[in-house]
Length: 280
Image (cartoon, rainbow, N blue to C red; front, side, top):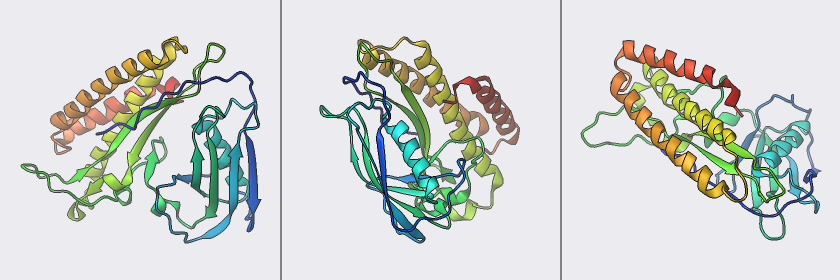
């Protein structure tokens, strides 16, 4: 298992305003519900449109913006996409915070496609979105001395806003399954028990993401200790996470021990429930 890249940012921000969102729509579709999933593809992600191109959306800094971290802006772009009937956002330009702006700024094209799942590169953990074998898009690998049937590549990481003596740190923790690095052997796709075992890896990842959120929220992070303390907390939680994943494999015998697999499933579900206050 590998974690997402770890990002922390420091800069100056005083005022509290939302970023400016603009759109150029050429083929507006009926709006989608506020709960409709919208897939976000990065600049480097390959994408072949098999649906309708709806238009372009942009986010910028109005000069006083602070509620404009990556995740806050992406949420606003998703709202704009839904209003115009789009379920895919393909980022074409991303300007990260710099000396001129504390905001993440984007240009993106939006589309309505019949099946967003075929275009997914990553999957964010969700209690209602369980993995399927179609999500394992990587090529099976030969691992010396091991007869491996499948491999799940998932991780968690965090990002912060720009922080100064006048602003409070915002922590964003994400749990991600990487489709193109996760794989299953074709002759194993009929095994529901194996898929359940792989889902356990992803769920266990979310457990430790919530543990990370809890510890980061409990820590009083400021501009003076953000980098050192947040990174130390992350490294500690991540080390525990790796140990736990190894124990999961060992005790379940890679999912072959049905009794232990059931015990672990209940344990992981209980831990997710116990940490339900730290889903965001």
